[in-house]
Length: 359
Figure 1: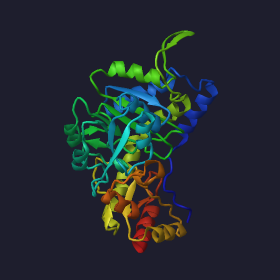
Figure 2: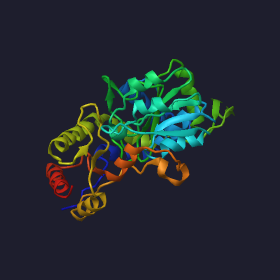
Figure 3: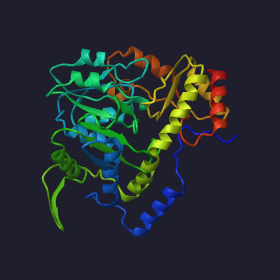
């Protein structure tokens, strides 16, 4: 049997045609963000029903820019340790102090009760992560915030996820998405910030300047630079592919949910991601007793697996004396198994039988 990939972008001739057309046009990128980049922002805004959207070149860049708007220098930012390291890097880039808290053992999203314990006079921001596409409890987290505490949602896994009947991206002041090639909506490289605050128009213009080296007030060849900025804008090729992916995202996510439903019913793992129609299932995680043996056996049988993630607070750069018992326990047992739209019925059945045999 052909190796079953852990991640596999779902593309067809539509992405190929759009990419070739963009390449042949000779218009590959614009720092100002016109063309297909602007079209993607408009369409994604409609998809999630947010007030505004600003595209960038990665989820990391989105988190960086969102944090740059929150004045976190010297202030504390609360986040889960069970996440990709970019969640914490965004805080460090902007001079903030990461404060790691434990997760909910059922969803692996940040635990609002643990946030409550760590809020102090120095707290400036909370970054919930919608882990694996499972929506964090935004309502409870928002109740913990105030005029001095802002919320940046890390929605890198959550394109198409929902909370309280609304798409993730339509709730918080700043919601950051990733369109990395392994994500539900895949591009060669890309990310986006959705904005829902009352002064979203001003923030949108500020972000568009910051994503393009601080350039502002551009009129033809003349422009000004009145703030620090970065080279974070999205290119036309990524936007072109993203526009096609956006047309297919509902269908692709429905396929992920149908696979998750089978896994939920048939996998014997003692602990696994819950099934809910509001989750976009970027990842499907289970916990096993001996992860090293389990992963080795599945790889021998042609099934790729992953471990998402090593806790950030255990990495050299972030190593602290903080104890996060649930995060540390889960991190030793968690395995991610394939869940993507390219899986066939026979492959899904094979994954279930093989995982049950060795878990």
